[in-house]
Length: 353
Image 1 (cartoon, rainbow, N blue to C red):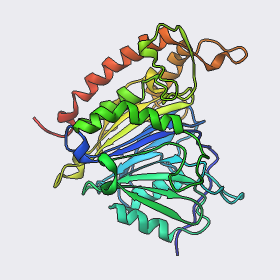
Image 2: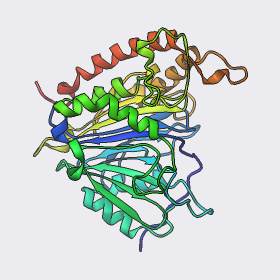
Image 3: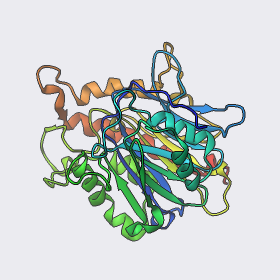
Image 4: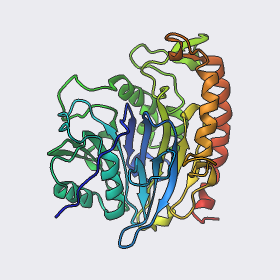
């Protein structure tokens, strides 16, 4: 009998994500990316080891007490990785229990080795599942897929069938009700910003955390704050939003590589106000771990929260929706430089010379 799944009380808001095949990347490793938006303002990374299960590292919600029962992006010792985005155009959940995605992903990380294993897990979960989401997964073979999943069923989209070797999801499912859901403009932002790199097979993890998650580009209007003299912009339909709390890229494996070579490039906090840190299956740097003095909060995420006050300096009325472009640029550029220093450590994290 399948195990029961507990309810979550932390609602997801809006996320942007992509799965990039090895053939579309500069390094020949597949990438799994999630730019997270949620009401949980702090995230941390932790290692989880339980008897009889596969060990893994994952992103968890910061909270007054340590809790490791809901994973929001992660990778495991078998080379399997998972993330999700809520799909608001799939059928609504049964009212007695919703928002179970994090629990399902924690279960997947503890038990799945392949994309097909995850499909089997979904097949055996009790109904209703309490999910309304696009689960994205990759495995050690380089395979990947999205599973657009509601309470009772799922539709699978394999990376091998994707044009250009890239799958993108925001907050609507391709299989859901047309023109409902959210994130259509953010989806087009990703398409526009990545198209040249996809065409040349040169996508990197930095393309995602540093290119997409720091971009104030709007595909509907063509506006790009980096090319504008505007001093203020409204926080509307950019990939980074005031509700953004992380940008995570799992860098997968080349054929035959050991899972220990995987790296989870982790920017916790509002991404333009933070920078990536390389996490491996055996090493979680202190700045992204649950090491705050009071409660389980990441220091890097808390630092980003303070810097956000400069990016969103107006608190009265609707002022909290206005971005100070000058502050945004100065802070993001500084954090970008730190990210590049961290990315340079990639070979050492894999044990390469």
